[in-house]
Every structure is written in C-alpha cells, then in structure tokens.
Length: 258
Image 1: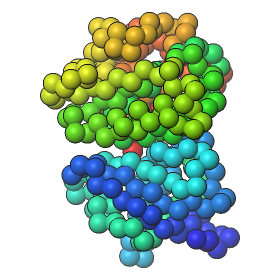
Image 2: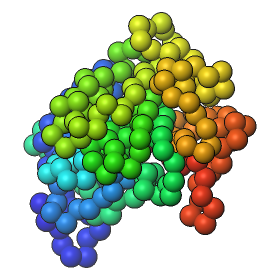
Image 3: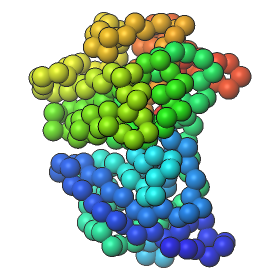
C-alpha cells in the first residue's frame, strides 16, 4: 500500500502469522517496492494507538531480494506491542517505517577468514537474512551459526538452517556452514548446555563448530539479549579480540536483539 509523500511510514498487509511456541511467533508483511534494507538491519513496525502510534524495532529475516518482509518475534508478557502482535491475523494492516536501521553488517569487516554469528532468542533473525546472500559466503571461508535458547522447543529454525543446503542461490556454498545450537536450561542431543561466554572461555564452542578461533582469522557478530551481548563482548575482549570501528578495524560487531 502507498502512503502520502510526507508520511514517514507505509501501511502494509499482514500475509501470514505462525505461532511457533506460546512465546515465539513469526509473520510476514507486504513489501513496498521502494523499501530497501541491507541484510542484518531492522525495521520499525507499528500500530495506531488512539491519537498516536506504538512502534517497536524487529530484525528482518527475509533476504534483501525477497518480495515480502518476514520477522521473528519474542512475545513479552504484558508488553504493549506484544499484545497487539499476539492478536494479529493475516489480512490486517501494520505500519512500516520507510527507513531500515542498524549497523550489524558483515560488509563492515575489512578482513578475516571465518565469521562466527552468536545469537540468543530473536537475535538469530538478522543472521538468517545474511545467510541468504551469496556475497557473504563468497567473502568468508567458514561461517559458524550459533543460536542459544533456554529450552529445546525454542530451536525453531533447525529446518531453515538445513534448507540452506538446497537454497537456489547459496547451496553451492553451504558446506562452509557449521551450525551449533545451545540449550541452557535442559539437556538436548546435539546442543551445548552453557551460556555463550562460558562456551567461548572454555573452548567448547570452537570445538563444537570445529573451528580454531584467532584474532587473525576470526570475526564475531553478536545479536541477542543485552546481557548476552555485554557478557560475551567482555569475554571476547579478555580473549584478545576488539570492537570493530570504522577508523579502527577489529574483530567484533554487535547489536542488541529486539
């Protein structure tokens, strides 16, 4: 749908809604022809709320070239936006800010051979978007995708990760991918069982991904809850890695999940 030229948002249509667990959902909306984003960025979505609006930021799951926009959401108990999303159905309208935001962009790294994507909860969304871009696979020799959740039923993208091996644009590179789920509150076959900072510190994560981490070749991207991002960042600093800045290249780029 279109908007008046002066409007900062468009009004889009909800195409489908999937309730994945009582707290997790995904949905897709129509994409305006003029909407541009880079894999790793997030949208501001909203609803009219009386005389005003309610807005929240959500990372985009879709590829840059997709015709629709997909999102993965954790529903917050008593959250104003979560209550709206929990009741949302296909065919309803939702507001989309015309501008995409965020700097969780792998292209910011100027060097490095291995890319490690560390996520908790909905923080996996931008990485799923990135992994649909052939340029990412061409850029790095190995890619490690790590998703940490509390319970096994929250690993809702296992099948999606497997499907990269049949993806029409990236299947030829999918052998470069190492996938490591983490479940912190119960034992699960194939999953590690500690928080990401501990798994980095004790070497279990590198072992699980079958990769040797080093500041010379390894680059880390962090996205998830603020506590994970902060604690993991401190751990990486203690291991000899540094924050990447435009004028001072480093090995870490991070963003809190939404």
